Length: 440
Image (cartoon, rainbow, N blue to C red; front, side):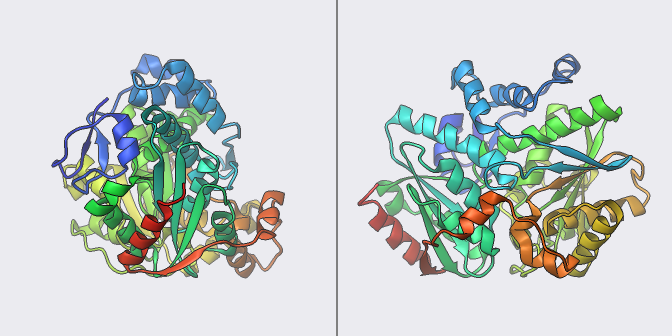
């Protein structure tokens, strides 16, 4: 499989080079030259398969040929020793709980796979890889834990000061070992801008081998398609639904883009709801065809506070810059903080189920979509992207009740935060990276 840049100015590369570079030299995002397709016969063989078997079937289509299949299989087994539960709320509404990994967030699916892939390729090249990441919360902690102790790698995380939850901050600043946290005086878009600037800085590229673990890295995006495939086949096998509708909490739009990959591979998926908060640039694009990103707005669903999402470039490429074509597969719905709080309360009262604010945004978007009459009685799967305990303040405000905190999060709260405070000026990041070069 060959990968090329959305900007079309860089030479096509292998999955190894796409993984180790992260961002293409022309500033574009890598995409596969073709999206592999599963025939009806192949899909039938996957019905009843385990999550890891489905993941392996997908991974070998994208990566097979560059990693021996037995090693790729072992890699997947080591990535996903945890469950991916699908909870039935009513006859046609389901929650896919993606928070059963080490950091209790969906980012574990992509980060753990990417970490092992990067470590494998770095060892082959005998290189020290510096992984540079901008995070609005859960990406940072997932990458920190995913790469912790992986040979030939070190991680630098940039996160916006005061704009992630306390538990998220504790997770991403206490990993230690080969992980370094930078607390940026700015918002997520500042962090993302600085990371992108580092990748095209010729002086820095001469001194360091940089890659990214954000969803701009195609090897973090591919494994996120695994759980769409799994859920769609589970609903077909267990409940007889021959296609499913997914409602996706959307911030940087990597999660949604992974869903598009799964749909185009042939898995039984009919449509997507791109559920956003007040940061609704893609929602507005789907309405009128104009992409007009605005400065980030701070909301209570903080991990989705992205004013200019990177993966819009991939979505736009897949749909030929045609918002009408994109709209056939994706409906954008923006949900306010007030609706989010009301939804958390409503779902708890109706089902006794506690969901984090990002899941609540997706649930509310699904309800509004159904109220429009389109696909009103189709199976709807809401992606639950984080354990509710990671957003204690929001849940306590919404429900006025104590939320049980898992032991692994309590342990993190006891650790000492270790982060370097920097401004949003790129020069400060460049200085830090150049000084970091002196000690692996």
